[in-house]
Image (cartoon, rainbow, N blue to C red; front, side, top):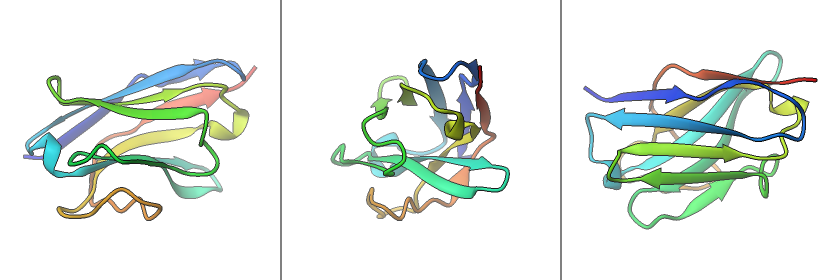
Length: 124
C-alpha cells in the first residue's frame, strides 16, 4: 500500500523558518517524482516544489523559489521541505504526493497519490 505521511507543520511568525517531513512507503523511492503542494481557503490547489527520484532534478513555483528547498533522504525514505522567510501567504495545508510513474519534475507538479496534510500557519 502506498503511503505518504506529512508532518512538521505549526504556527510560525513571518520571516521565520519551518521544516516539513514526509515519510513514504509502499513504492520504490527512486522511481518517482515527489511533489509538495498546498491548499488554502480561497486559493485552491498549488504545486510548490518537486524532485525527481531518478536524477534529483528540482523545480519550484515562482511564489516560493529562493525561499523553499526540497530534498530527500533515500535511506530514510523521507521527503523534506525546508521553508525560510515565511510569509502570511504561505499559510496553507501542505501535502506530499507522488507523481505517476514516468513523470518528471516540472511546472505541472503532476501527482496522483497523496496523504494527509500538515497545517502551516504564518502569523504574528
